[in-house]
Structure formats: structure tokens, C-alpha cells
Length: 277
Image (cartoon, rainbow, N blue to C red; front, top):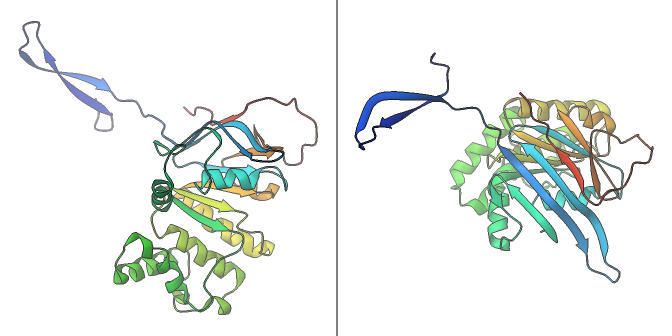
């Protein structure tokens, strides 16, 4: 066996219960870890009449994966985003986030898990106009009890990571759209999330600026961060490792945004990451 082999040493025991010094070696296979796992998750808003915004779906996203969820307006993207971001609880099914069953959690626990595990990037930048770039990023750590000096240090590090080390003290009103979105990305990264949840992050940007922002997101994924991109843009979806289409509250594996051919409806739409050798 080489040093690169993943092994575990199991001490052998004789029939009489005595320890045998002979080591037994067993290979430990790499096991894929699901960061997100939806099992029959659905969302129905009360009426009258009740509205089934998301039909029961299954979705698995591996740790470190980059997945695009693509669909037109009114397809259920916002509902799915709110569920994945722990902003709403499903009315049926189970949502596992990094091994935690979130479906029956109390709101305080959900809020804490959201703060610990998820970073958000939205189409609107949601920056405080009278705060500098550094202050906008640092403010995201206030409710986690991070000391002020540490907050500023982390903010500066994240801004430098997204290429804004020269704009640390700039106000949002003096930044371009692309720079403001990169401040928002830095803010999302401040708490070292496991998941970066992006909601149409390039919707307010021109194509050249959008490409630069998406390149930053590509780099974050290459560094190991799990990315989940909500988009209606076919080209944006194509940058992901894989895409899942949502239409009429149903998920379908693959990027079918421009596929107008009807597909047979099912009671349970499934989009599960295929096993990769």
C-alpha cells in the first residue's frame, strides 16, 4: 500500500478475546457528501383557493458542486429559492442541509443555520448607501458576535479576494454595477458559508460586466465552494456543471429553458446528481 491509499487499521481479536498484533487493512472509499437533499419537498400557499407553487420534488446537490436552476418567470424559482435559503419552510417533504433536517426546525434554529451555512447574492445589490464597501461587508458579521476589529479584517480580506482591494473605502454610489455586485459577493462570503445561493446575480448588469461577475463566481467554485445559481438566462446556466429546469413547479434534469416541447407531467419531479466515478 502506498501513502496515497486511504486505509484504516483494524486491530484483530482472537477467538479467546485477546488482541492480535497483526494489523488488518481495509480501504476506505471516498463517499460523496450531499450538501442539499430534498425529498418530496413541496410548497402550497393557503387559499382560498390554495396555490401549489412547488410540486413534490427531489433534488440532490453534492458538496462542491455548481448547479444552475433555470426557469422562466412564474415557474416556481422564487419559491424554491426561499425554501433552499431557509427563508420559508416546505408544507411537505424533507429538506436536509449539510446533514441537518431543516423541515421541522424552529425559526430561531433555522435562522442560525442560515447564517452559518448560506451566503446570498441577489439581483439587487442591497448595499447601504452611506457605508463604505468595507463597512457593508463587515456589517454582515455583527449578528454573529464577531468583534469589530475582526469584522473589518475579514471584510478587507473578502474584498481583496473579489478584486476590490483598491476600493475598500469607496461608497456604493461611487462604484460601478459590477463593483457593487462584487461587494455583495464579498459580503456573502464573510461568514465562510458552505453554500453560495445566487438569485439572478447578473440581471442588472451589462453583458461584459456580467461576465466578469460570473468569472468571479467560477473562481469561487474552483476553490471548492458549492454554488447554486437561480437564473432565467440560458447562457448563465451553461456555465454550471449541470442544470435543472423548473417549470410549472416541477423540476427536470437538464437545461430545457428553450425546450417548448411538452413533457408528460408527473406527481413527483426528480433531479438527482448522477453518480460520478
